[in-house]
Image (cartoon, rainbow, N blue to C red; front, side, top):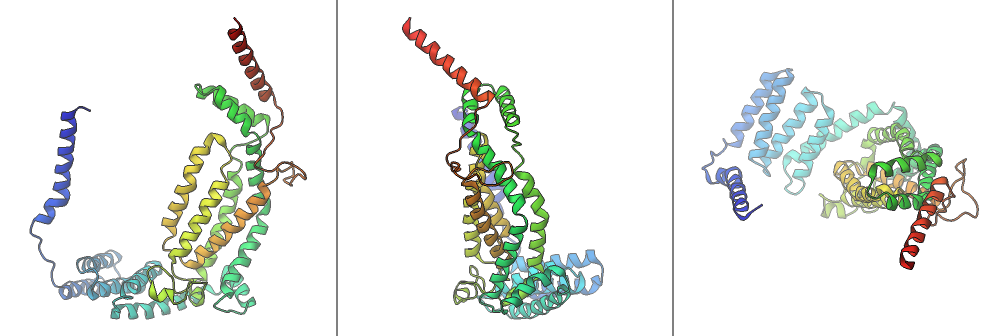
Length: 396
């Protein structure tokens, strides 16, 4: 790109920025109607809507406009509260009602808006009603059994219950986990051969792919077999997630180290006051544990760079997704991740035999020994021929 083209491009970019961001602010803005008028109009829309879902959503839109125009004020908090009430009583959407009630409570904590107290009261009643319905669910009873077994103490019973449930799950899926790690271990064994293939066929990706598939076939390795056990576990993972969700109201009573301590009063937007609320420190710890786990899973040298990149991007993505999840759910995932990583460490220390058992006296995972293969012999011969050719050239 020459100088004139660069100047033209920068000029056009500056004009676009000015058009979309600067000019609208310079133009005189029509002030919104008074908040009380907008709230009255929204309330009238709710009354006229009756049970019409579309009209009720239009009324919610009117309340949202009040919240946007008067952000950070008591009028905005009241508008959000009315939105939650419409979700709860008219649309029967309890999920959105709970989310909106929580948003009102969060916004009202520092400024002590009256809407926050009302939202807290209504949320408590809604959660109690939902909890009463969930009590008959087998997953709810399963988790509640362990909480009762440990005395229902807010300081430790709920955390111990989560640990026990996670341990039971890990024991049940151990065969799948072992198969996953066995596949990873086999990939480690042939790393030296893969590296040699990469060096020899660096300029020919097609031949490299064919030779690598032949190497996988010779060693009876499926490069994607480590993914299958994870896919099989997904339904169980979802079941456990649903179990934590069903029991969410009970986690309001639970504490964990800093969660529920005086720090929750000092930093309400960061530290949770109970295990039913999101907690930023716990989310950060979980993200770090996931990065460690991901880095330990890098076994295929052909995808090492991509896997290293995913070791950071995936945890950050999950952290963004889970940022509003209850601390109880994050604690369960953290416990699960720690157990899985520990299990992976001990299983991967030694190679596994055909039955998936550790081989006594074998080298550790950091020192894999690849068995002689046809491809390995070919590579050695090719390397030897190349060396002898270089010697002859030096001689003559």
